[in-house]
Image (cartoon, rainbow, N blue to C red; front, side, top):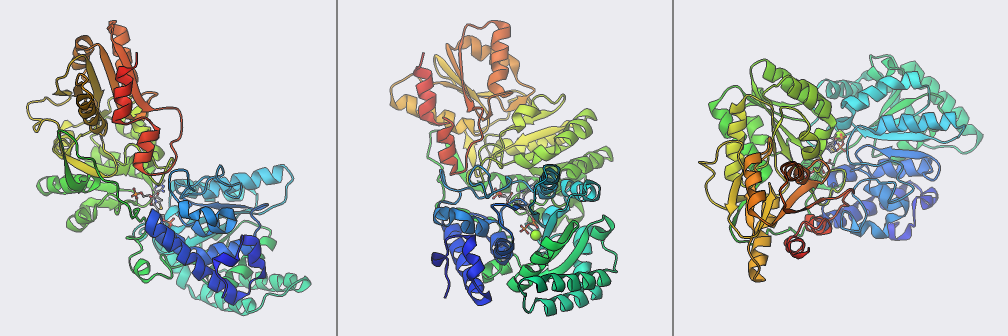
Length: 621
Ligand SMILES: Cc1ncc(C[n+]2csc(CCOP(=O)(O)OP(=O)(O)O)c2C)c(N)n1
Ligand SMILES: CC(=O)[C@@H](O)[C@H](O)COP(=O)(O)O
Ligand SMILES: [Mg+2]
């Protein structure tokens, strides 16, 4: 029996027959399950793509050919087979290998993964570069049915005919994004999967696939097969209409079938799309049954929130709290509608969907469309709440600026996963929204420090009749941070939570936790305790209160889990410089770097966002 331990890398696949390859696939699955159970990671997609990746690596040579995985959350088998077998146990850990492809990790990762739907564009770029530079290799993009519907992927499909450089697209169709794929494209792919012409074609190909000859006769076989494919491509097919040959659908778990088709694709002279049908979660009954539940698995070791003076933790995540509050508010206001771009699972919006199916819109992975759609809904008189991760909001920056802010439309954007996100790493941190958000005229940006504030800010934003962004992090939400009540603090004002001496911490959101920890540490060390000021509203800023803090303290430390450039620290520096306050102003924020994957604790430490560093900074001259 062949197991992973007998394989060094993909080059060894050449010597394995079908039976051995099947055994190897089982062994790869076992390794993926073992590591993901401990470290967390993207289980269902990776399980579903094992045979696909093994077949790709039998036919293509990644030393020469370029293979680009869309998102890359399905590429664990590729990592294992391309020199990272031993390191795979460090998946997503600090200093270990990334959960996504990354060329800085291996020269066999040809493009960075993390965000979806860019693989066709990247492949087309690689292919055009190859042709203009007179090189000779294959370029393959592997894209899922969920990722395919995004605007970027569709723009790339549209450009293939014009670009005239051959790319091989592999559409991994498992009928799932994170949740079930919905929409016109899903219907089109489903029709292709059952169309009688393709069923007949599949039969012929299966006949051809029974044995793949060597040498000259492969050319004969390919020419025969090509002829058959041409003959049977009659039904309406959007890929064919776009000038891309469509081959499929094939069984994405049938190694022989895929090897033959991929070999044939290498001989074909035009861009083509190979439609393979796979089962998300393949080989593991619980993942097959509930692929959405095992799409992203959390690490076995849960990070605990530290007990801290004046902070009471809840058992809810920020996402759960946002979803619950949205639902409660929607019960009393029929104009409230809720939107997500394929993230119903992570954003915990099931209950809203079930309760108000007509007021819930999952647009699929289509962030740009979602924001313009929300703008239209608001212009039409509704109150849209857009639930989106900070990192994915980057995709729709233009829509936020022009469609929403410039038209002053009352869209509420609930920005989830703001700050460091842990194991998903640099592609998924929400570290930019404050920096670019502050520069957008008329946009209100706020960060609740606890659940009471979240509710207050969501209600207030819905009444404000202006564009509002509410940002909150990944993980558990505090029930209460600092003083119990925010009532009496006017909308837009910051709040002095602790009155200390000599030094003050100015911050928002998760910075409050660090601030309270620093306060506790200062007390333990016999140092003066700081004032703690929560700005609450990052834009517009409560300038008057900040001026008072600047005049009442010798040292000010600004803490923010966001990039320094364009952040709160700079805004306060600006006030201090303009008004000429003779204050020592220091800040701890994210410096000019992409923060690697690992636990959130590892990341906070690496970015100096800890109580120890705050106290150290206070003591430094
Ligand atoms: C721009 C962007 N939006 C959202 C996501 C979150 N996300 C990651 S994988 C995924 C589903 C992708 O579905 P598909 O491409 O079909 O791959 P599958 O998970 O089915 O293997 C989503 C929504 C992302 N990575 N990038
Ligand atoms: C690959 C991807 O983009 C998503 O699956 C993402 O990893 C989800 O993040 P959460 O686990 O924080 O929901
Ligand atoms: Mg899919």
